[in-house]
Length: 266
Image 1: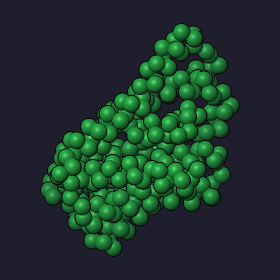
Image 2: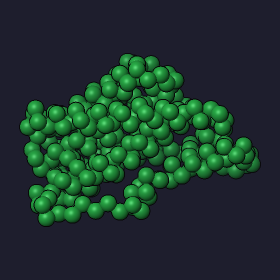
Image 3: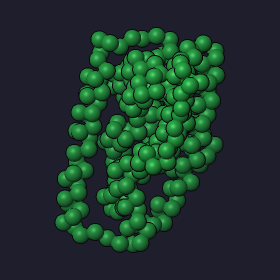
């Protein structure tokens, strides 16, 4: 993150990016609304509705989204990845966690706590901190020593292979034999891989943004389920097996889905 910003963007170029955040923000809010309509039409169980809507809407934008976009588009895509990440992560750790907590069968006795510091820590991840630090140098027109940049580039080259380990760990922890497919999980997959990218594409026809930015946003919107959802579902006594199965299927299906998506947008 740090290297991409300092090497590839000037102060003026970055300031032009900020307006693009309107697309991920509007698309995610619209996707949440559609998820509520889907719940009523297809009668999603009341004890998994919040988990369903969160998985329907929020995607895995860093562990999978960052290396995939970097591999496809190169370093120029990273700032756009971060713009989507900021919106996605903020919504996930506010609206998303609230709706998951509401799935608790004892919701009338449960307490949904919003503590500002933990939410800030989740949003300001190491990836985003590297991005912000690089942005400070760009805005101040400062440069870094070549030897330090070379060292950081060695670390940056580990991003994609390490993310593949993460994907493998997710699938292993879920357990392929434990996956169960039902209409609710099919609804999550529909939201992740059809409706979310479609809404982003439609907004991109109405709101003018650079073609690369729109392509990155489409790919980011069509990522697998957030891998934190099963943990949160268990913590709030929601439907953890449903969340784990949806996560597992979304990761496995993604391996076949991403080539198709790339054919459509490239």
